[in-house]
Length: 279
Image (cartoon, rainbow, N blue to C red; front, side, top):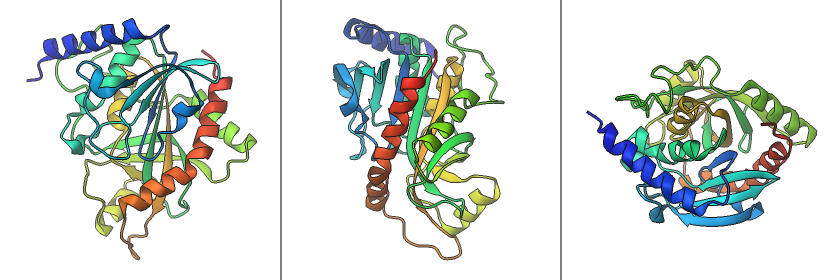
Protein backbone atom coordinates (compact mmCIF):
# COMPACT_ATOMS: atom_id res chain seq x y z
CA UNK A 1 0.00 0.00 0.00
CA UNK A 2 1.30 3.45 -0.92
CA UNK A 3 1.98 5.58 2.16
CA UNK A 4 -0.02 8.64 1.12
CA UNK A 5 0.57 10.39 4.43
CA UNK A 6 4.31 10.30 3.82
CA UNK A 7 3.85 11.28 0.16
CA UNK A 8 1.68 14.25 1.14
CA UNK A 9 4.26 15.37 3.70
CA UNK A 10 7.02 15.17 1.09
CA UNK A 11 4.98 17.20 -1.41
CA UNK A 12 4.22 19.86 1.22
CA UNK A 13 7.90 20.07 2.24
CA UNK A 14 8.99 20.61 -1.37
CA UNK A 15 6.16 23.12 -1.86
CA UNK A 16 7.21 25.18 1.17
CA UNK A 17 10.82 25.13 -0.05
CA UNK A 18 9.81 26.53 -3.47
CA UNK A 19 7.44 29.11 -2.00
CA UNK A 20 10.35 30.54 -0.05
CA UNK A 21 12.46 30.85 -3.21
CA UNK A 22 10.03 31.99 -5.92
CA UNK A 23 9.11 35.68 -6.18
CA UNK A 24 5.63 34.86 -7.47
CA UNK A 25 3.91 31.62 -8.42
CA UNK A 26 4.29 30.33 -11.99
CA UNK A 27 1.38 30.43 -14.39
CA UNK A 28 2.86 27.77 -16.66
CA UNK A 29 5.02 24.68 -16.14
CA UNK A 30 7.13 23.54 -19.08
CA UNK A 31 8.60 20.04 -18.88
CA UNK A 32 11.54 19.58 -21.26
CA UNK A 33 12.44 16.15 -22.57
CA UNK A 34 15.42 14.38 -24.16
CA UNK A 35 17.67 16.81 -26.06
CA UNK A 36 15.28 19.71 -25.38
CA UNK A 37 16.84 21.51 -22.42
CA UNK A 38 17.85 24.87 -23.92
CA UNK A 39 14.60 26.83 -23.52
CA UNK A 40 15.64 28.23 -20.15
CA UNK A 41 18.28 30.37 -21.92
CA UNK A 42 15.44 32.50 -23.32
CA UNK A 43 13.97 33.03 -19.84
CA UNK A 44 14.41 35.95 -17.48
CA UNK A 45 15.43 33.70 -14.60
CA UNK A 46 14.67 34.51 -10.97
CA UNK A 47 16.26 31.35 -9.63
CA UNK A 48 17.66 28.03 -10.82
CA UNK A 49 17.59 25.07 -8.49
CA UNK A 50 19.21 21.68 -9.00
CA UNK A 51 16.73 18.87 -8.49
CA UNK A 52 19.04 17.40 -5.86
CA UNK A 53 18.69 20.58 -3.79
CA UNK A 54 14.87 20.48 -3.70
CA UNK A 55 13.52 18.29 -0.89
CA UNK A 56 12.24 14.91 -2.08
CA UNK A 57 12.64 15.65 -5.81
CA UNK A 58 13.87 12.53 -7.62
CA UNK A 59 17.35 12.58 -9.15
CA UNK A 60 17.72 12.54 -12.93
CA UNK A 61 20.10 9.74 -13.95
CA UNK A 62 19.95 10.25 -17.75
CA UNK A 63 22.88 12.19 -19.23
CA UNK A 64 20.74 14.19 -21.69
CA UNK A 65 18.59 15.61 -18.87
CA UNK A 66 20.17 18.55 -17.01
CA UNK A 67 18.18 18.14 -13.80
CA UNK A 68 17.33 21.77 -12.98
CA UNK A 69 14.21 23.77 -12.16
CA UNK A 70 14.32 27.34 -13.51
CA UNK A 71 11.69 29.86 -12.35
CA UNK A 72 11.18 33.27 -13.91
CA UNK A 73 9.44 34.97 -16.84
CA UNK A 74 9.26 33.74 -20.42
CA UNK A 75 7.43 35.62 -23.18
CA UNK A 76 5.71 37.73 -20.53
CA UNK A 77 4.41 34.78 -18.53
CA UNK A 78 5.50 33.56 -15.12
CA UNK A 79 6.96 30.15 -15.85
CA UNK A 80 8.70 27.18 -14.26
CA UNK A 81 10.89 25.14 -16.58
CA UNK A 82 11.80 21.58 -15.67
CA UNK A 83 15.07 20.91 -17.51
CA UNK A 84 14.94 17.17 -17.74
CA UNK A 85 12.63 14.59 -16.28
CA UNK A 86 12.51 11.21 -14.61
CA UNK A 87 11.40 7.93 -16.13
CA UNK A 88 9.89 4.74 -14.82
CA UNK A 89 12.77 2.83 -16.42
CA UNK A 90 15.15 4.58 -13.99
CA UNK A 91 13.39 2.68 -11.22
CA UNK A 92 10.87 5.35 -10.19
CA UNK A 93 7.15 4.78 -9.80
CA UNK A 94 4.79 6.85 -11.94
CA UNK A 95 3.89 8.84 -8.81
CA UNK A 96 7.57 9.67 -8.19
CA UNK A 97 8.06 10.62 -11.85
CA UNK A 98 5.18 13.10 -11.59
CA UNK A 99 6.24 14.53 -8.20
CA UNK A 100 7.50 17.88 -9.62
CA UNK A 101 4.27 18.47 -11.52
CA UNK A 102 2.23 17.85 -8.36
CA UNK A 103 4.34 20.33 -6.41
CA UNK A 104 4.24 23.01 -9.12
CA UNK A 105 0.47 22.63 -9.55
CA UNK A 106 0.04 23.26 -5.83
CA UNK A 107 2.45 26.21 -6.14
CA UNK A 108 -0.10 27.79 -8.48
CA UNK A 109 0.57 26.74 -12.08
CA UNK A 110 -2.61 26.34 -14.15
CA UNK A 111 -1.14 25.23 -17.50
CA UNK A 112 1.34 22.46 -18.27
CA UNK A 113 3.31 22.17 -21.51
CA UNK A 114 4.84 18.69 -21.60
CA UNK A 115 7.47 17.96 -24.25
CA UNK A 116 9.41 14.88 -25.23
CA UNK A 117 11.38 13.21 -27.99
CA UNK A 118 9.70 10.19 -29.54
CA UNK A 119 10.02 7.55 -32.21
CA UNK A 120 7.74 7.86 -35.19
CA UNK A 121 5.28 5.06 -35.91
CA UNK A 122 3.16 6.82 -38.52
CA UNK A 123 4.83 6.20 -41.92
CA UNK A 124 3.80 9.71 -43.04
CA UNK A 125 6.07 11.25 -40.41
CA UNK A 126 9.70 12.22 -40.96
CA UNK A 127 12.51 12.80 -38.45
CA UNK A 128 12.02 16.29 -37.03
CA UNK A 129 8.23 16.25 -37.22
CA UNK A 130 6.60 18.22 -34.38
CA UNK A 131 3.56 16.33 -33.12
CA UNK A 132 0.91 18.12 -31.06
CA UNK A 133 -0.59 15.41 -28.87
CA UNK A 134 -4.28 14.80 -29.52
CA UNK A 135 -4.51 11.67 -27.34
CA UNK A 136 -2.34 9.06 -25.68
CA UNK A 137 -2.10 5.39 -24.75
CA UNK A 138 -0.66 4.47 -21.36
CA UNK A 139 1.17 1.13 -21.59
CA UNK A 140 3.44 1.79 -18.60
CA UNK A 141 1.59 -0.62 -16.35
CA UNK A 142 1.51 2.10 -13.69
CA UNK A 143 -0.48 5.24 -12.98
CA UNK A 144 0.54 8.16 -10.73
CA UNK A 145 -2.99 8.25 -9.29
CA UNK A 146 -2.89 4.65 -8.08
CA UNK A 147 -3.48 4.27 -4.36
CA UNK A 148 -5.47 6.41 -1.91
CA UNK A 149 -6.75 9.67 -3.37
CA UNK A 150 -6.19 13.05 -1.72
CA UNK A 151 -9.45 14.80 -2.53
CA UNK A 152 -7.97 18.26 -2.03
CA UNK A 153 -5.59 17.55 -4.91
CA UNK A 154 -8.13 16.25 -7.41
CA UNK A 155 -10.98 13.80 -8.07
CA UNK A 156 -10.71 10.05 -7.51
CA UNK A 157 -11.71 9.37 -11.13
CA UNK A 158 -10.57 12.26 -13.34
CA UNK A 159 -12.25 12.56 -16.72
CA UNK A 160 -9.93 12.00 -19.70
CA UNK A 161 -12.44 12.43 -22.51
CA UNK A 162 -10.44 15.49 -23.63
CA UNK A 163 -6.98 15.07 -22.09
CA UNK A 164 -5.34 17.82 -24.14
CA UNK A 165 -6.93 21.28 -24.00
CA UNK A 166 -8.55 21.87 -27.42
CA UNK A 167 -7.85 25.61 -27.32
CA UNK A 168 -4.13 25.00 -26.68
CA UNK A 169 -3.90 22.35 -29.40
CA UNK A 170 -5.61 24.61 -31.92
CA UNK A 171 -3.41 27.55 -30.95
CA UNK A 172 -0.24 25.46 -31.33
CA UNK A 173 -1.27 24.18 -34.76
CA UNK A 174 -2.34 27.59 -36.04
CA UNK A 175 0.86 29.21 -34.77
CA UNK A 176 2.97 26.51 -36.42
CA UNK A 177 1.28 27.32 -39.72
CA UNK A 178 1.69 31.06 -39.21
CA UNK A 179 5.38 30.67 -38.30
CA UNK A 180 6.05 28.41 -41.26
CA UNK A 181 7.07 25.48 -39.07
CA UNK A 182 6.81 22.73 -41.65
CA UNK A 183 6.03 19.15 -40.65
CA UNK A 184 3.89 20.02 -37.65
CA UNK A 185 0.97 17.67 -37.15
CA UNK A 186 -1.38 16.20 -34.55
CA UNK A 187 -1.38 12.61 -33.39
CA UNK A 188 -1.59 9.96 -30.69
CA UNK A 189 1.37 9.22 -28.42
CA UNK A 190 1.96 5.87 -26.72
CA UNK A 191 4.05 5.55 -23.56
CA UNK A 192 5.93 2.28 -22.97
CA UNK A 193 8.07 1.33 -19.94
CA UNK A 194 11.49 1.02 -21.63
CA UNK A 195 14.42 1.21 -21.42
CA UNK A 196 14.69 -1.35 -24.23
CA UNK A 197 13.64 0.11 -27.56
CA UNK A 198 10.91 -1.44 -29.67
CA UNK A 199 11.26 -4.65 -31.66
CA UNK A 200 9.83 -4.80 -35.18
CA UNK A 201 6.83 -6.79 -33.88
CA UNK A 202 6.23 -4.27 -31.10
CA UNK A 203 6.46 -1.41 -33.58
CA UNK A 204 3.88 -3.09 -35.80
CA UNK A 205 1.59 -3.69 -32.79
CA UNK A 206 1.81 -0.09 -31.59
CA UNK A 207 0.88 1.14 -35.05
CA UNK A 208 -2.06 -1.28 -35.15
CA UNK A 209 -3.52 0.05 -31.87
CA UNK A 210 -3.53 3.60 -33.16
CA UNK A 211 -0.27 5.24 -32.02
CA UNK A 212 1.56 7.72 -34.23
CA UNK A 213 4.65 8.06 -32.02
CA UNK A 214 6.17 6.15 -29.10
CA UNK A 215 8.18 7.21 -26.08
CA UNK A 216 9.01 6.31 -22.49
CA UNK A 217 7.85 9.42 -20.68
CA UNK A 218 5.29 12.20 -20.22
CA UNK A 219 2.10 10.29 -19.42
CA UNK A 220 2.65 10.24 -15.61
CA UNK A 221 3.18 14.02 -15.63
CA UNK A 222 0.19 14.56 -17.91
CA UNK A 223 -2.13 12.45 -15.75
CA UNK A 224 -1.04 14.27 -12.60
CA UNK A 225 -1.52 17.67 -14.25
CA UNK A 226 -5.02 16.69 -15.37
CA UNK A 227 -5.84 15.37 -11.89
CA UNK A 228 -4.73 18.75 -10.50
CA UNK A 229 -7.08 20.61 -12.86
CA UNK A 230 -4.38 21.99 -15.15
CA UNK A 231 -4.75 22.65 -18.86
CA UNK A 232 -2.31 20.42 -20.74
CA UNK A 233 -0.52 20.80 -24.06
CA UNK A 234 1.66 17.91 -25.21
CA UNK A 235 4.42 18.45 -27.80
CA UNK A 236 6.62 15.67 -29.15
CA UNK A 237 9.66 15.90 -31.42
CA UNK A 238 9.69 12.83 -33.64
CA UNK A 239 13.39 12.00 -33.69
CA UNK A 240 13.30 8.94 -35.93
CA UNK A 241 10.80 6.87 -37.91
CA UNK A 242 11.09 3.11 -38.31
CA UNK A 243 9.38 0.75 -40.73
CA UNK A 244 8.86 -2.63 -39.04
CA UNK A 245 9.30 -4.38 -42.41
CA UNK A 246 12.64 -2.67 -43.08
CA UNK A 247 13.86 -2.14 -39.54
CA UNK A 248 17.01 -0.12 -38.83
CA UNK A 249 18.98 0.03 -35.55
CA UNK A 250 17.76 2.76 -33.17
CA UNK A 251 20.67 4.57 -31.51
CA UNK A 252 20.09 6.91 -28.55
CA UNK A 253 22.82 9.32 -29.70
CA UNK A 254 21.02 9.76 -33.02
CA UNK A 255 17.71 10.38 -31.22
CA UNK A 256 19.30 13.08 -29.05
CA UNK A 257 20.98 14.69 -32.08
CA UNK A 258 17.71 14.75 -34.04
CA UNK A 259 15.83 16.25 -31.08
CA UNK A 260 18.44 18.99 -30.69
CA UNK A 261 18.27 19.77 -34.40
CA UNK A 262 14.50 20.28 -34.12
CA UNK A 263 14.73 22.15 -30.81
CA UNK A 264 14.87 25.70 -32.27
CA UNK A 265 11.53 25.12 -34.01
CA UNK A 266 10.00 23.79 -30.80
CA UNK A 267 11.35 26.75 -28.81
CA UNK A 268 9.94 29.22 -31.34
CA UNK A 269 6.54 27.55 -31.11
CA UNK A 270 6.51 27.51 -27.28
CA UNK A 271 7.68 31.13 -26.91
CA UNK A 272 5.14 32.41 -29.44
CA UNK A 273 2.40 30.34 -27.85
CA UNK A 274 3.21 31.74 -24.40
CA UNK A 275 3.08 35.31 -25.73
CA UNK A 276 -0.47 34.67 -26.96
CA UNK A 277 -1.62 32.42 -24.11
CA UNK A 278 -4.79 33.53 -22.37
CA UNK A 279 -5.42 32.71 -18.68
